[in-house]
Picture 1 (cartoon, helix red, strand yellow):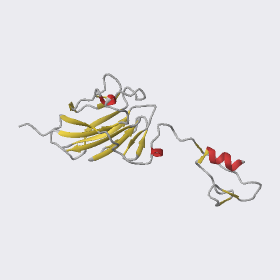
Picture 2: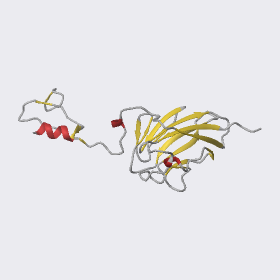
Picture 3: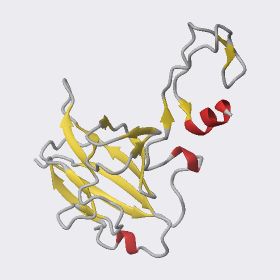
Picture 4: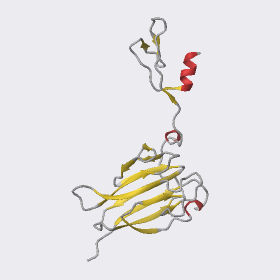
Length: 191
């Protein structure tokens, strides 16, 4: 008796004209339960044609949850140089997160929506790829960045025993510690 495969429906979007970015992505990919590599490398299972991507940018890793006989997946970031956003959560190098039934993933301008349909096979799963001509994820552009935010953590000492005011106008004395002040705001405060 053949067991039903777990199916990942993967929708992809990138703003480049045409489908050059996804030229080497198959329409269907059947895979065993080893990790599924995404990146620009020749050995990536999902090979994306973008020079800013790492050879192995991220992986989708199947596993069995305790007490379950269905495949579950986690996403693991393999790139040292950029951030991957999964359902609004930023992940850095070697961080991972379990995937739910529907997941919104973005990295290096690529938007990917992964939908998981359960199956009973524990040896293989199949991915179907769809390419979108319009964005899949709508959110403010400032939320996604590939650079660490320039944040200065500094303890502000009181000025000759007097209470000073923080950036929001609240009084702060010797017991108040100001942390995570953006450097531009700190420079303006010190002028």
